[in-house]
Length: 488
Image (cartoon, rainbow, N blue to C red; front, side):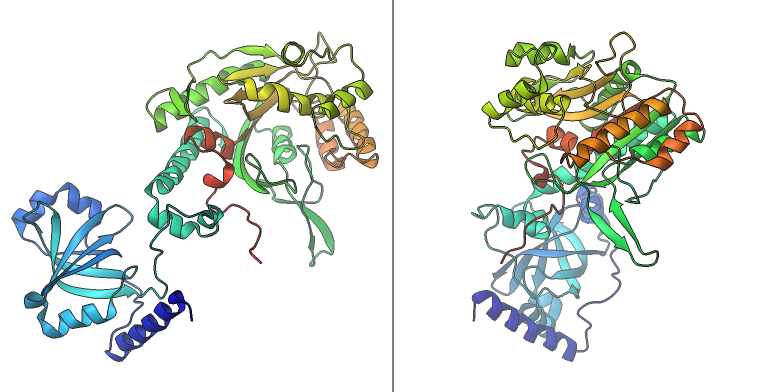
């Protein structure tokens, strides 16, 4: 029997003892009067009043000292020392505590506050109750785990032991809250669109497929909310946004997880140039709200988000960094160049997609300060408008910072005839083997034919933004429960 199993067996005996003594080890309620942070903040006032308070939390430290015992209890707001004295609790009560309470248990304690001779803020315990008996011991070592993946598999332990990790998720929540606040202040309406969709669309990705038994129909987990949000533009809403989960059946790496969080918004009567200005304003709002400043540190590099940010032409940057002229080179030659760079190019991939693959490997990692890369080649985004003065380039923008693509945005294609033609091109590519090609959505095309106003669309990878703003290396660090391959 392992040490862990022996401890569990011993704690089960303690659990039985608690029950047999007439106490319920998992009560539904606690009489807690204060959170620990409140007590610590107004500690002197509590000491002067000599008023009894009730605290609740997990036992994080347990130390015997003659006829007394010191514990540390921790709730979601802070940690404080508890002082158990045999003379105060009585022989029977004190012994009951020693015999049945362990590290990791949740406890309710009642008493008055005082400072020890060493100046430590403490509650002298006059009564206690079990709130939840833990059956497994907390690990003795956690920060030094050789198997780092164990931290992600057992995130609940990671949160107990690693305050920095808990802080990252608090910051993540604040980032998302600030994004919502900004958009609401700008007049955008928060909406919810279907996650289960009969036709997946709005992005280049492989979907997850499922089946609805009640209607005997196949459905897909959405890869993006785009086409439904744009239906709302047709319906008369001028500013709509959604923050929610999307799902793509792709590889898992530093910047990709099968389910992830997206922010998309659509803005009638605006274009991609308006979006760039709004994006700068949005980032300024979020950074000041979360950090109080516009400069962050990411992996040792100082990155300043003070606007305006550079606007750089895709074609020019591509030529400067790769030596390849996209206006001169053909698709076959470009694919050969990509293979020289050890890039795997799927069958049927069009020229614009190959160019993006090369850009992602060669150019993007070199872009550290926030930069708008504009005017990608036509064919890269089938839902984006082309420039009026150069129909081979798109009216689009990609924001890159710290070598990472944070968002894509563009002037939305609202010509239903051109959109149908683009969808048909994508359908041909799909049949040739390009699995990430977009499919024809006939209902969306019909909606467009009723008239969709000129508009700008914006898609931000929230997880990637959180990586950057919390100085994290990979998505798994800022997704509470990342997708993990099961242990054998």
